[in-house]
Image (cartoon, rainbow, N blue to C red; front, side, top):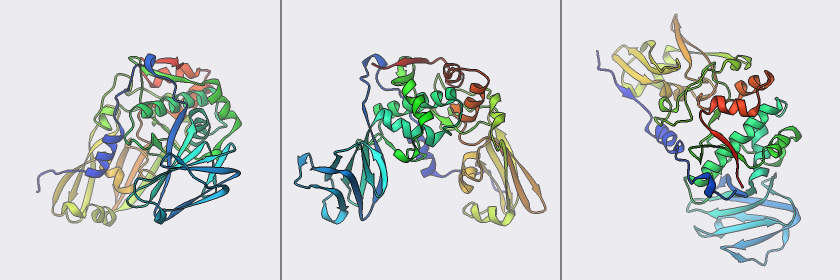
Length: 370
């Protein structure tokens, strides 16, 4: 029998650790409310098309360009690395490759292609983020809780940026942002009614993680990213039982997992057993037995093998029958911070957004930035 192996995907964990710093930045009393946020929308190897019915103006490396027109076609072959092209609309919106956004765009030429960054007023950005992250039909108090969480997350990242060129990207690695097309009157009202309100811990903006639903209990980030904070801990989330679907399952054959774990040299996989769990019940270690020996793999690495859309959380058990492995679980996402379904359930039970936020983020203060 081979000794147990600690198997992990270095790049995957590196990205997680890098994205999960919990430093809060400056004291809130020293923060001037950031009017604009810079959001990376896309990258290209060839170019972008930008359009505004009201017309566009350009600045190249800070200098006015003679360009005049409604459409600007950016070709990467025309610019050297490091070039910045700022594209401003004379109206209220600008299209990038046919998708409308508020604010303006900066195109930065890189050594391999270019990136498009939307410079957008923070509150307008949130009017797209909130309905992209939570159904606009949900309870107004849940929408307000989501708005404050998203605003706090954005401000945290403005003061703790990982790159000098932009503050966040527009996908699930940050917060989902789709531009004007996702805006909705109900969620926009939630943003407006909580304008400039954020959460702080020890007078600093918090890293306000959130997820779809916890399966009944949230997770301490120490067991997800190896970082511990005073405001994020595992808490019961009983109202998550209103999530649909609340439970999930995924099955695969021994041949599939044998192929996925071939780099371990275990041979044909015959058994997989949950070996260790964290206090929340989420899977820490899985013991894998093959024809050539055994190994221990992290639950997070097992999830990454199949992807988060199939293994939706680490709150699961494994059953085995006639060569088929069945993973049965509940919850969706990393489980840290606010549960969106839990927040909506609390709101429907007459809890306020203040109650919701202080349940999922412990010992925080809810303040308005001047």
